[in-house]
Image (cartoon, one colour):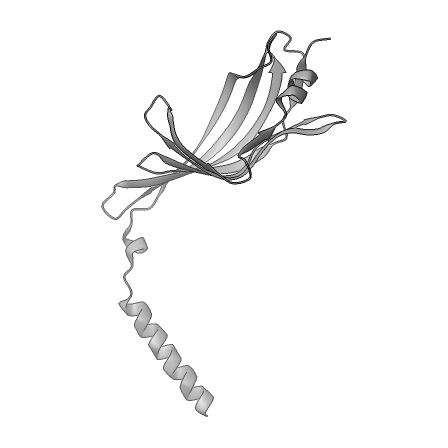
Length: 171
């Protein structure tokens, strides 16, 4: 009998607490959601006699969040990334990257928070030569992407440039 009364009292207290709590999230504007597809091709690492280029294809799911007044507060992008790295002098010499999946959260002050497996390159028979995984945070100074601040966990990009260059060097 005592247990029943205690449960009833607890139920009433929880109900009152939930009624009195502010509902800030419920008052916020629902996030905008969309998906886009992108391809990039860029020079990445200088191996002396050639450049390692990367070609990547990505699908990105985006959620843009707003406060109750409709002001943008953050965007969360989930990347599904597939790419290759190749010798720019001999594009037929390439390595296929392992598919990666990661999230980037963008904030109005320029902070970017990265979480997940960003890059994973393996040389057949030798194992991994580049890997970027964990959590990282970046601040950008301006639209020119001048890096102001970087904080990472697990050394954001760990790699063996010499092994990558050797694997992509023309015979």
